[in-house]
Amino acid sequence: MSLPRGSEPDGAAINFSYWFNALTLFAEDEGYAIALGPQGNVYVTGYTRSDDFCTVFGAVPGFSPTYFGETDAFVLKIRADGSGLDYCTFLGGSDWDVGRAIAVDDAGRAIVVGDWSNDFPTTPGAVQPALADLRDTFLVKLDVHGTALLYSTFLGGTGQEDAVGVQVVASGAIHVTGWTNSSDFPVTAGVLGPVYRGNTDGFLYRSTPPATDSSTAPIWAAAARPPGRPDAARVTAGDRRRHAFA
Image (tube, rainbow, N blue to C red):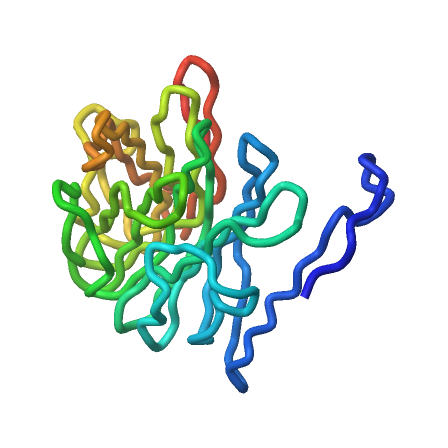
């Protein structure tokens, strides 16, 4: 359901509010992250156990209108005026999948990170096309219509990973943060934290996709934390000089 628009731009009134209440009895739906697009559209990701989640507001476009099972990640786009959805899609495989964080580039394309079915869909040329072992994060970029994967890849080692933040900067580079307990998490040469220090380490991953958007070649990746402390990189940001902060 949705509430009517308010009239105050300063936050004194609600512009619009949606209640995503799928009809599947006893199913769970949870939004994890939200992002604002360049035209004022609202993008949301999270997880659902409702096979009718994307049809509650009627038939809308989407990469995958089919619920895969167990728990699926979802991505949806709400129009800037709150009048309805431009698209809604499931993302997942046969196991447990959840969208943890979302960002939107200047063209209105959604970038989502989360985790983790072993048969989660990846695209040709992905830097890691298959699950490494126990639990990896995924990195997905949808086209502007939400109907195609421009690229999709796993990120991780033979332990467990979880992404908790994603950001896209003006150059198109993508920053991903999260945690890992994989001693073989793929890091690049010359980074600040090239060695896994045990327990749980935070990671920071940066990639710039080529013009074709067909792969995610890493510029650098690092995992680091103070000795003896479990940690995770929680947020990511970047400046105009392409520096990243986590």
